[in-house]
Image 1 (tube, rainbow, N blue to C red):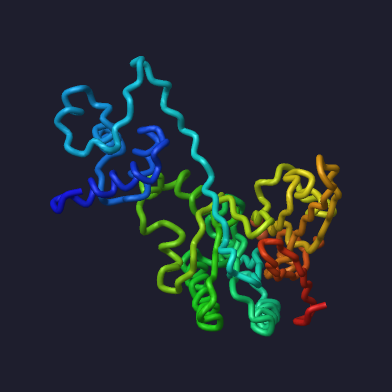
Image 2: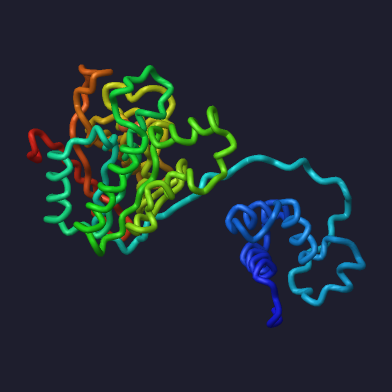
Length: 333
Ligand SMILES: [Fe+2]
Ligand SMILES: [Fe+2]
């Protein structure tokens, strides 16, 4: 690349070099989505990608100086129709983390401070070197489509309280990476915008991570629906598991996903394991559902089986062992 290479060209060439097998259209979509502000339209990026791949005709191929990325033009002209499949992002939490504290279902501002304090004390005592917030950090009551009590929390206050909790955690666990993935409750924001203010959907200022100012607190934001794993465990919020949780949500998750898994969402501590008859030795898969950190007897569902709880995951060379904790009256039981 010469000195005068435009930043946008540099981006395109980098992607082409890094993803040598990706189809031109896929590359164009990826480049456009991941480099907001550099390109006007995805179609224009597509044109430029094709150009550098040498797919814009013989003349263009001859004139182009950079020939290292050329691909052989297809022998036929017809293209398959563009696919709208969006692959879920895969995220592997760093293997260097030895002790990961995990919790979710805080449902700010309906959070239980006593339970939170107890959990954070435990994280501190155990010297966790990573914290993972597994969805439903915020309730977003104001954005739900259920019947609402106007005296309850306003959206603005919920966001403020959410920021305050993240700031609290950042200060208390200053050098520790903190990850946050939204759950179905945070997704109420997206659903609200889709239904009521579609024009604001792609405005950055209305993105959850921007509203929560995760950059300022150095919280690592993981996009909704990403597929997250830590060692040999999948970590899911739990809302995508078909059907309800049942009496033992961990069992339901294990049977549906058929792999080691940790979920939140059902607000109830449970575990389940199953031996799997394998080609080689048989092995055991384990599932865990974690308790919540929110009000246990909310007005809309006063009688339930919820409990306060969280887990600590110990990482031994990518083999995870899970320690679950339940909290009652401010104490770990
Ligand atoms: Fe929840
Ligand atoms: Fe949930």
